[in-house]
Length: 563
Image (tube, rainbow, N blue to C red; front, side):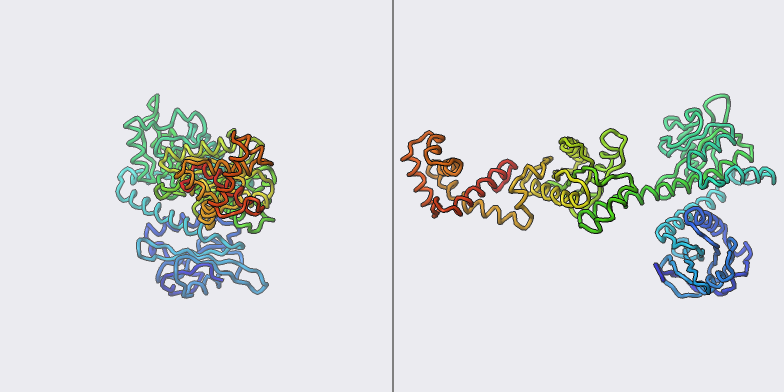
């Protein structure tokens, strides 16, 4: 059962018990394999065993396998002719138990070096495996380059721990029965081991996590000395040292890779001649790297799941499962919500919908009081849709206007339609469609930075759609156009007269409203019938005239160029 295929040369040997010597692998391969293997056990549950096979060499075990039939799976897979990048296959043993064998190709540039294979009881995520390998390849290259070019790094690699200190280091970072440590827990352990405050910073100097008094060790980007240490540390996985804040103490700055983009930095006070301090920082940096990446993976996954909920509501797809899916993310779909649909105003430049989605997500983050859950926001077609809790007032209009202001500051001209308040998947699905319709009406009536509720559109909201806009305009023009034209040419008041006649129960009441004699009103009615070619006593004629007047009034309120 191939999820993805693999592209590399076949492995010569299929003997899984063969252990190639380390001289067969380059330093870059050794570093890459070490990082990938560690990440596999951190990221994927139920891993039973791993092996690595470089091109032209038999596979070598990386860790023990608990089933005697599993090495045969490695052997079969090592000679299979797949193509692509990564693969996952399912294999059943003699007892009927299914195991999943994942293959990750290790490449440097355009050259395929080998592949890591592992067996797990659960199907691993191929996208996550691909990301792990990409990051490991990049960081292994940085490791090798730093060791070959930095003479200070060569000296520091000569520091070695005695066996007892190595055992203590292992115990320090042992997750134990509590499972994987959090970033905060890990920093507390490092701070206790070093007797120093510890901070994790971005390369711009922002502290994202700390243990102890972070301001005693944190780097100041306004300082030339500290900014130089940041630049050097970002290029090397070996700790870089800079002067402390006081007392002649030394701060060590260690690179923490977090995937694409700029790395983070682990900063602590340490004796640069201490093998123990350097070993603790290196080990902590490696674990922090994986923890931060897994946090980012989890954040990305949650964002995708929120987007999927909004998309499924829009498509009215699998509505029965949405309340449970939303509850897992901290959202009560059965509570009152409103849908806000944002779309680019007509005549604006090509909108950056992804950028607009980011701005709106940040605007709604944490709820109105900063204590709620993150919003349900996603892009659907040419709209960005946000589903936000509704407290029963019209606060959503204020929210929408603040969002339009934020978008305008980024050079994005948008309009916003707001759907009716609803609870439950069915009502919210309909509310999203109505919000989209309200936004489309604003866009097509040449409004900019405008907000409207679907309920305020009346018949126009009920009748309007993209394909019907021209037909609605034609309908209004058919019934009111001749009156507009006649009033313009003859300076008459036929349109105002028709509105008065249709708006009152008797001709006398209409005449009084117009401040004219009943005979004058009857004459005007006869002329209106001649201009329109209709009989005002016909109920269908009066209905069409009333509908055209209502639509025309709404279009004028919206500033339609067709009014």
